[in-house]
Amino acid sequence: MQDNTPAPVVKYFGNIISYIFHPLFIPTYFIFYLIQVVPYEFVGITDWQLKLRVFSVFWLTAFFPAFAVFLLWRLKLSNSIFLKTQKERIIPYVIVMFFYWWMYYLSRNFVDQPLALKYFYFGVFIASSLGLVVNNFIKVSLHGMAIGGLFTAVFLVGIQYPINNMIWDIALIFITGLVISARMIVSDHSRQELIVGLIIGVLTQTVAYLWVG
Image (cartoon, rainbow, N blue to C red):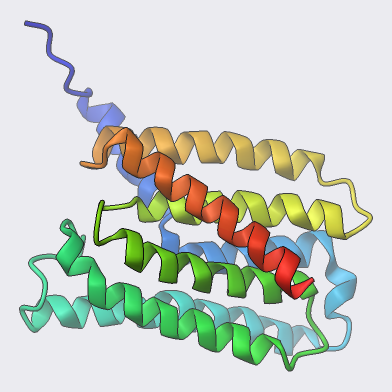
């Protein structure tokens, strides 16, 4: 009988890719991307204020949700910090929904940042809300939702702004394939759960773009 277990080195790199492109890091990556491609959209703030803005994105969309998951684990409300079951993901979904809605709410009052951030935050809020619903039926891939949303948001920036975004689009296609492949190797997600996650990420960013734009 043929052994289909991935080699240890393959699993190692699969885990590294999964950690680098963890869903909680995606909003921080997106604002770094915007600073690179549309820096003129941030001209209303100083470099120090921009650094604080980036830090606040990381603080509210990565650190606090991660700390909340850690507390759930320590309080015995989940079996691990990896949220392996659908039941364990319910409260974290609600937590990230709150933070993403808060980021969208704040971004609506900022005139010194790209419109892309507004629809991105709204998109991830919708994605987390829809993910919570779908979680009742299947353990949809959070990585799939996140990387699908990032790819779509980057693609839409190329439509919204008069910039040459082709290199970034190609890079995100490659990264999306890499992340999905990594999750197929190191996670217990089925192909259906990964595809559904991707679709949710793509659709919610598209809806947010059309709604906010």
